[in-house]
Amino acid sequence: MTKTLLYCFEPVADCNAEILILGSMPGRESLAAGQYYANRRNAFWKIMAELLGFDPNTPYEHRHHELKKARVALWDVLQSCTRVGSLDAKIDTESITVNDFQGFFDSHKKIRTVFFNGSKAESTYRRYVQPTVITVPVSYVRLPSTSPAHAALCYEQKLQAWKTALDIADRNKAT
Image (cartoon, rainbow, N blue to C red):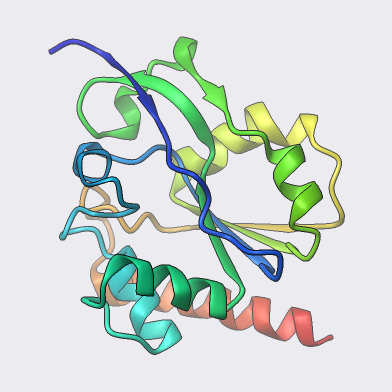
């Protein structure tokens, strides 16, 4: 299998976003569909639907609307990279280009919390992005990956971790 140069999607966000959820790079199924978390076995949309109160099977554009309504933005750390398959572990670190987070934070000034959907998103952000951006105080929280490849936790455990994080973010914005 050859490595292919992959590109992420545009962010799902509006100017009212207070929470940014970051993945690393969309997997093969997502890239083929042109949609974040298109793999039916990925728990992301099921978790978001349960926590935000919408049907996970609603059309993709409506799921975007529900995220924005909840003041949640969605993006990936990597703008481009090469990778064989879909696993984060297969990303060629020499090929990594990160997204323009300074520009993103400058145009989304209400972001106060960044959730990482898994450890690769967090480690890549902390290594390549965090030292280069000047932002308002932001809290960073790594959450268990919603990917089916992260089988160490069952769906209920992942859901509870995400629920707890969103509850804390809600309490923090109220203070």
